Amino acid sequence: MNAAPRRARPSDLDRVVALWIALTRHHETLDPAFALRPGAEVEIRMILEAQLRDPDTAIWLLGDGAGAEADEAFAIAHVSRAPPIHPETCRAEITDLYVAPTSRRRGWGRVLVDAALAWAEELGAERCEVRVVVQNPTARAFWESVGFGAHVDVLQRRM
Image (cartoon, rainbow, N blue to C red):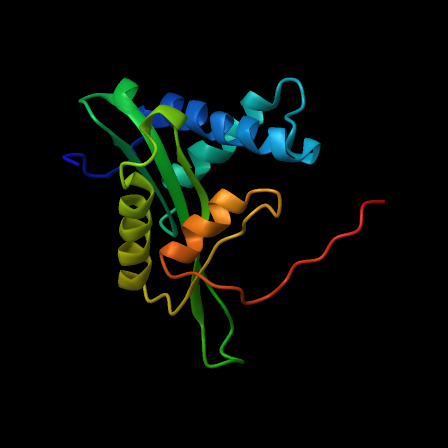
């Protein structure tokens, strides 16, 4: 693999939005709760634009060629700090990770995770979390293969 991840810039917003929507469409096939409302792209664009400006959030893009149109994978990570009531005061979360179906099995997910973890560690994160949709055993297997394991079960009840 010759590709290396690069930090997204404001000029990459259109590509980040497209990849984020692709990720959400994939999740929608697993659980209808992930379906996007009509007109959601406007709100998504505003959220991602704010994340690009946030010093505690990083977005990476990855692809084979030059230019944003070649980017077929992305990751978003966020670092948060907690009051000093527990020994751990800084943690990271990889909130989003997506590799387009035609670009999978190239090691890109692992490269994006490595970039996110290195960045988070530089900012003082002591641990990193991810959330995996229960109906996505492939994603769970991926996260376990890069060293993540269960920490807290999140249970839900639909109303």
